[in-house]
Image: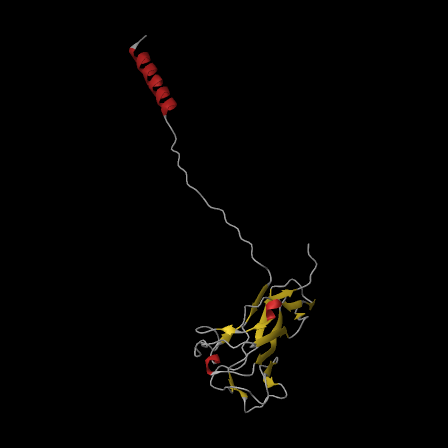
Length: 204
C-alpha cells in the first residue's frame, strides 16, 4: 500500500469516527394552558336606602309608623302617623330604591322572572361604621326591637330587550316602632338579600 493510499484511509477513518460521535444539543421549557368559565348573564343591584327619620321618643299619638318607598325614590307615611312625630331628615342621603340591571341574556324578546329570598322581610340590626347612612350615624347604644322592613321587586316579570338587558327595582316598606328611647337612635341595616333573575329560556 503506497503512502497516498494510507493517508486517504486514515482520513476516511477519522471522518467516520467524528461523524458517529457528534451529538445534537437538546433544551426544554414549560408552557401553561389556561381556560375560564364565566356567566353569560350578569345581575348587578344597588342597595336600598329608606333614609334617616326623625322620630319622637316615648308613646306617639300615631303609634308605629309605616314608611313606604316607591319606584321613584319617594316615601310616604301610613295613615295615622303624625308628621310632627315622624319625619324624613334632609340632612342625610335621601331614600333610594335598589336598581337592578341585567346584561348578557341570550333572550332577545320576552320577559324574565325577578325574585327576592326570604331575607327580604326581616328586622334591622345595629350598623355603625358602614352603609349609606351610618358613616355619619354611630351604632345605637340599644337596638330597637320591631324595627322591620319588607322588600319587593318592582316588576316580577321584567321585559328583556333585544340587547339581552333588563331592569327592575327593589322597593318596600319599613316600620318604625313606638316607644323609642334615646339609646335607640343610630344607624341600622338589614340582612343581605339575594336578588335572582331568571331569563326563562329553555335549558340545553
